[in-house]
Image (tube, rainbow, N blue to C red; front, side, top):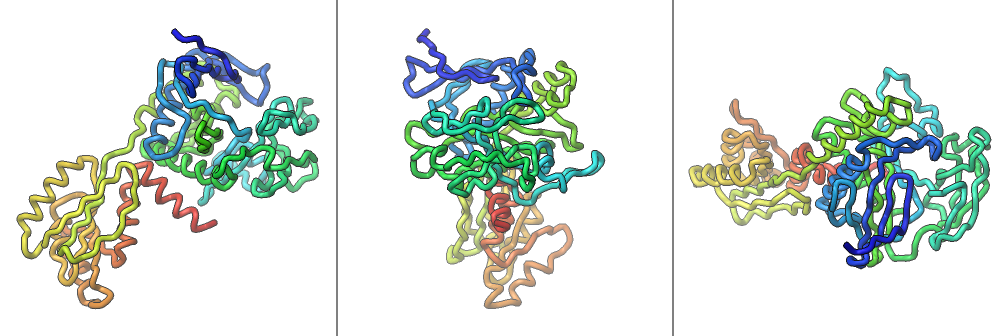
Length: 439
């Protein structure tokens, strides 16, 4: 076996350089679980290394399939995986769907009673925290360029300060658990953003935010599809050998708050709240097992045109969503249409949506809607010039549940909304666009 040289060791993992695989590192998880950035509160939890590796590999595999760049090659053992070697960016990137945890200490106006549902953000909240150890601020070259002061409550240096406005060229650092409008939140140790972010083109706060939002939405969709709530998460980024910004480190049950549909905690928050260690271990094992169910289904959007002269709309490229183009008239060749329908249903057992794009009288859409449980959306493509054409898509007999949309573009979006209920990448695609309307 080739020699493995330790190049970094953290609280929960060790990273080795692989002499026989240049450019790759081996990430080995530990059984340690930590809280409050206090080494004295670290505990050993049997099986945690296995659960963490299982979770991270499942998450990174899903993100990779979704087209997101991640520092992950393959799992090599129950506690190890290989990854491209990256230069880490000293930032903790936080995305929040609900107002919980330290966010409420900085925004106490959103505090709810225990009986109330936490405040939900329609547009995900993006936050940056500067990674520090012992209060020392390191620049992108690993040199000390500042330090925070001592926290009067704990007597220890303030670590991982909150960056008040990541878009500023000079970062104003604040206490991570005090409201930013209070005087005691100020750390009085400004940091030049350019000292922290690496040089490669594309490594910007805006790009970090975009990727982090997309990562969260993929995982939010994946968890929602099996009945769980992703409340928030904390991830890290690195730069690979080609200068790409990639999601790095790990994403496991330490990285997020994950709850059941009725708000029961499943993640590291249990350890922070001093639950029994055996119960925490059981929850980590449960979460690891659930991540094995993460998948991208094989579905289809069927563009079914009544005539070859009907121009089809563009369909975005979304992992798991195939595009099927069929030309067939429901009036002139109904038998052939039904044969084609059965072939599509056989090819895509995980489902899809049919867009029946028809001018004049729509015999195609209602016929298909009566013969399949797939959603059928009728697109009355001539309704703008001949409004009377829409009635054949609206006045339908019983047991013919076709929906009608006049805009082909909106019909495609409606189809993606439907597929997003099973496809976490389609969910990310649509939800990201929806939330950007509020920017």
